[in-house]
Image: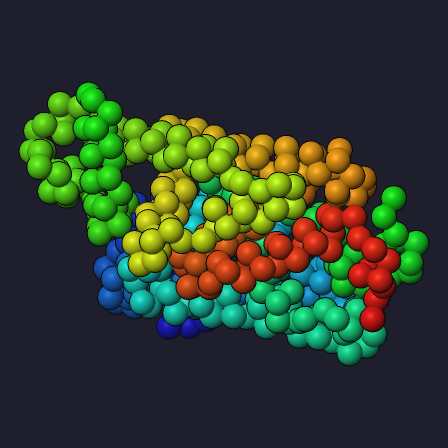
Length: 200
Length: 200
């Protein structure tokens, strides 16, 4: 399969998932988003499950690239830009539907070892990204020396999961979580002047 | 229906959800957990959806009672005990499966207005519980005066959602989140002596 075909099929899968949700989407729905037949799709992928696994791989690669290209001159800036890159919808309406499809896949994870492995990889990549940024901040003296990179990174990944779940389940805006995390970085990580930490 | 019958049916629903998951559980599976027939179940509930809505109401009542009976002499103690009450599994293995079923229901929420309304109520109850505790702590001078009860309560609810999702999807232990939240209370909310906030 050429890269272009892969890209086309993956974009079609994305659109079909947004329209129909994980549980209801069919190979036919995905084929309908391309100029290919359902039979042609089955030539490349044995089943819907097979195609969705490839789709998760594709997303994981995109996610990894997005994390690797987060810009910023300092660890603080790169942390803020990471929150922005992973939390904030890239294309409005569709993103909300996509988030829901991902939540459906997460809810399948305990029943589906192959899905679970991919989800663990996503979790691990985001964790490592945060951990390395925080460790760099500590090493450079920008973050307090008593900050534990592992614990803090894990907490950020948990907050990210919570923001996604709450947005999908009850419509709570992710921007609120983003602001609290930014403030957390400023008040708990960054080495501060005394005036900022004195209780009022 | 007597209270006893309700309790029996709700316990049966809980067990059936843990065994089969939300998507696959049937009225027959639930009947199999009782000494009643499927027909008898249908006498009380029109459909599986109808029964699950009643089940969510039942859980909501339990959850509200659990929050209302959180003990502790001070707001800090009551916050710690709340983390314990809502985050930590009550019965091990089953709880993990139940958490997954709840995640499946959350993932249905965007497609199901009736489920969504219940989930919004859960979210709101937990939010209000945290907000009132934090506001009490600020009013009593136990928490810093610059702590915003709304923002902090929202953050705790998000962290709670994240801990649940991550536990179900990738097996990340909720206890880690609990420890970070406890530390957050100590360092960000409680009025501290200078020595504790001086960067090392």
